[in-house]
Amino acid sequence: MGDSTTGPPAPEPPDSARRRDLRLAAETEARTHTLLIRTVRSGGILSALMRPAFLAKTPRGYGIITTTGRKTGKPRPKCVRAIRRGDRAYLVQLLPPHVAMKRPGARTGWLLNILADPNIRIRLSDGTFDGVAREITNSTELVIARTILCETVVPLDYGECAVHLRGRPTRAKIQHLHRYWFDTGHPIVIELATH
Image (cartoon, rainbow, N blue to C red; front, side, top):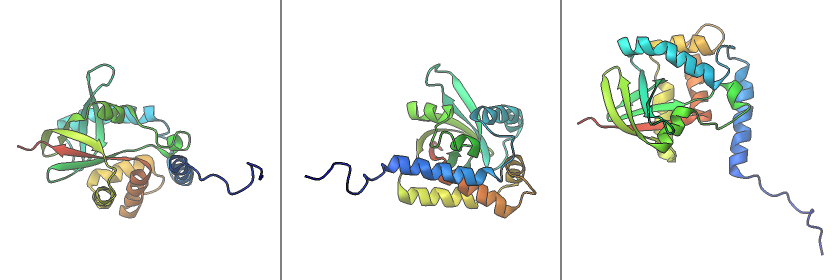
């Protein structure tokens, strides 16, 4: 009889392979990022600082999503980059590379709130909408969302790029940053109630 330790190695579970790939992508990307956004908490602080300006005038391509706290039941607003196409808004729960290297695939509080209660409210430049949010898992829908989120560049993206990446913001750098976020983050679609 053969030894149970011989033979080909067991295949790596798909989830661990994805996490390894996310770590590698984050390690590569971290070299180009500033040191400002290094934790999930720093992203929350940045969102809180942006909220008053977004409430006064929500910029095109961005919004404030309000989820219901899964533990508290209270409204939880978060500034996000959100691109609307018809009765849908697309966004990504992203992780800075320094977070993704340690916790690839981690979900932030606002995404966990959506998973617990997908009914949200979102304020965009053209109005405030109720909606139902969900993570995108369908491959065709992922291609559509990636194109919309990564190819669209709005004026505020240049400031966002300056906060995250070293050097002068350019359209190409912005699109690269958005592709990285999409590929390593959690893409979300919101079905907007537009009646």
